[in-house]
Length: 362
Image (cartoon, rainbow, N blue to C red; front, side, top):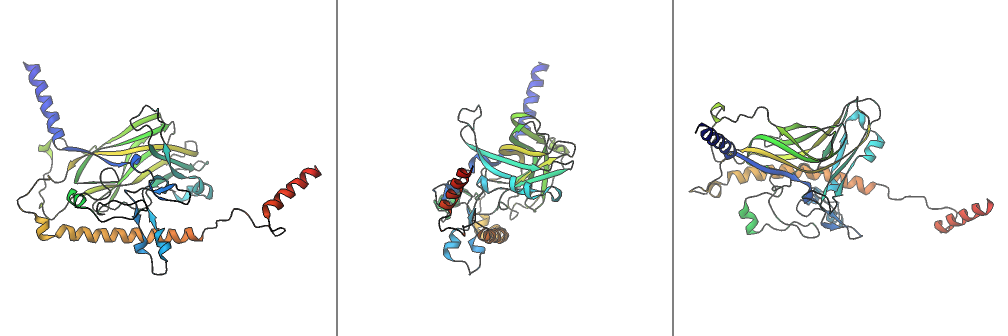
């Protein structure tokens, strides 16, 4: 009888814990394959769900054709790798990159046949502490309205169904989770190859505060789920400090993914680090209990919509300026691979004849 009571008590305790804990995927890299805005060879360059048009921040001097090219997204090749100042060399900048890494069809994982994030970081060879950030091409917006994009990356007007969902564009595995109170645990699905580097996850909250969470070291082989558990999480409700906030118009707090940090200790061997990432998930307490209310507060007052529209405008302003400057720098980049010959109108035939003469001489 006593054993039965103990089992029931343990089951009730577990049920109480799961009653206020939610699980959500912050970002799933298998969703970020390029599927729109094809290049001259017909190869897609951008991800249709996350494609953003930054031509709205461009000046009037740009032509319409140029503005058509001003699009970017969270497609995996668009992500960036940046190193700390002492590790930033010409070689490291040119070799450190992010790619879409296809998983084999016969791989023994649920996401076989899909693309995950592949990261290469070129650390210095000398004894030096170094770190690298793997960040999205722009800060993921938290208030962008949900809508679809066509094959050219042009965002369409939100449908009635999309408006009724109450979701924003980057929710559901694209970088943002809404209604987040206390974060209990964070999980990263990654593939290790016995590298000694350490891994951090970077998340930003509603107040713009970015925090980093140490997930562990990458000295293992194969796929593994690294988990961070909040050491200050209080499970027992009676021991918590209860704070009561007005339900409206506080809105929904959120967290959004701002990148990874890969650290290399001076005592470890330098050179290249290669890693693969599938997703980042969290277990968290809800900030607010969502339920139907007798009066549609937001429809009546519109306070939250006004605040979120202002924040969205601020996000887009910061996002657009950076992307326009990069567009201008890209337009100035040299595209020639070799010199035009001054000795012949046909440089290719000249090169061939020169090679033939050299061969005859030998």
